[in-house]
Image (cartoon, rainbow, N blue to C red; front, side, top):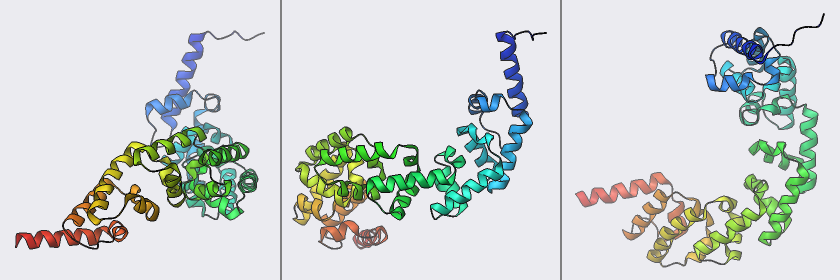
Length: 310
């Protein structure tokens, strides 16, 4: 005899009952109700018994050597993890960690916590992806591994697409592909930024800083973080830096060439060094003044304030 099809209300009622059972069975600490409700709609969850799901969370935390809260976070973000035994996840984590030259604990904290579903990747898949990136970017495997360690989300992208974007970006900036890859080694974000957006950002930053694009790009090659900085923020910092240059009688363009990282310093630091220059504290070498340790700069200002008070 054919089973009677359930009405929509009955289906919804069963789902709510399963969610309540799962919530009651879930090991502490429990996730937020909102996150849990979203999680409960996933097929991997809806088709499993509450005891099974809760057991995978509890046992997974123990086998992987992480807290139940951390395991809950991974499962919430990637319910597919429930389809793998904790022992298999551990083997995968050990193999992938060895490939990346990391301890399992570091691999879980530095890579998996950022991209949860990498936890159930077979190490062979990870190795193949790393080798593809290495070949397309012209890097040694060790260099590529370091790139992946810093930006695990690169593993989620097609290596051919990343390499194509990198070539487009290099063409827009009128630099060699090798130079662009060198920038990416220190600032991997450039590999997944839109080439057109990167080019527009460089053009706008150059305009705001009142320097030729070529000069700004040379600065980027020495300080890659500049390529992702907001043009408006750079302009505000440049205004303070120009005042400092005027006090110390040095050209802004020269500072950008010699010490481009100056534009990555915080406004508080730049303002402090401007105050020091105006009061004749410390060195008159602008690079030395800008790079002076904060503790020494603070000490010089305290000493000056103390002398004034005395």
